Image 1 (cartoon, helix red, strand yellow):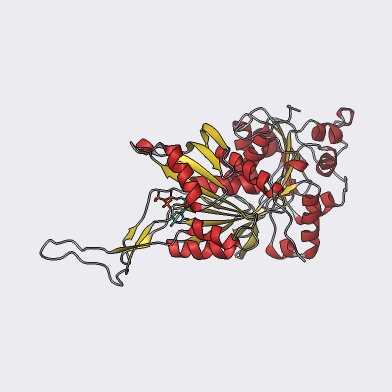
Image 2: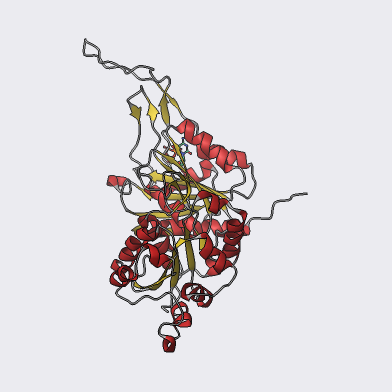
Length: 427
Ligand code: CTP
């Protein structure tokens, strides 16, 4: 086992020892792609399928893609004691697809094959990626087993909503390989142990993307936000065990695994969805770029070019400030922790951080992530660098790196504030 890692920004850890447990579901075929990506990322992967999994995808496929032999029972290579060795030496166990039956066996501590034995001996992070029909997922027996596994420190990813095996669709679909890899990368980078799922049981709301204010049925006022930062935040929080609502304004990225996405268009829609989702949340993060202005009236018909060559004059009015409103609704309570973003450029009057401090005070939020966007930095890019300003006067510089790494720093600061918050008085 490689040493336990923690701290944000550690980044993907190539060379980790990963156990890929495969349950007996049709989605096993998608997990071949996960395996390929794991090995291409430099991880050593031991595939442990169940006997039922091999009815969907045969052993030669797993062996060829992992470069290692596979077995399903504890009676192969007995002198090597694989049912103990494989779990003990793992840095991470990922079970995908995690079927209802497999999670039931794991929740009850059965050890009737190599995979369930491995789950009992593993002392590393364990991630279950369920896939099954909606009825099976919703059944109280499955929900109780999921709750048991989560209570013991496993990360059980919420299934995706979409097309299932037959013509039906609903909740229960395996997230796409890319989304599974994001979870794996995030967990490995943090070196999470059971207790490290520090957002488990928390409800978080994140906004992402740029709003569009309609001018007419085909035109809008918009901005260059890609939504990447908000999506990175949502994915990182879900990988730390949180239940995440992601209010996404015009984002074309794939949703992170296990995250509830609420699509919106305009600032008015974003405001409505944020206020609705805020009730009872532990933290709210405004990573979206709402348009500050909107046309006073959107034309019902497409605005035509005038024959005389003149251009229309569009009258604008200010949009509400959602972040300030969320702070006002909280009205002095410690929770939810509220986080804003500020894309700033410095000028002769003040530098980027001075503008950031002033904005933090003006908005009244707890944390403000300040990006310097001079010369086209940050927008639409994969990487970022920022300073995290806190209302208690402290600041944290986050060096250039991935948006996923910045997301971890933001959640570290949020966790510290959630933990420090006084329990609400329920009397
Ligand atoms: N924000 C918001 N509602 C708006 C505009 C911005 O909630 N109508 C949020 C953004 O999501 C971000 C923070 O406020 O978290 C700061 O956004 P920014 O555009 O920098 O702030 P503005 O108040 O618009 O300030 P400026 O006058 O500098 O544009």
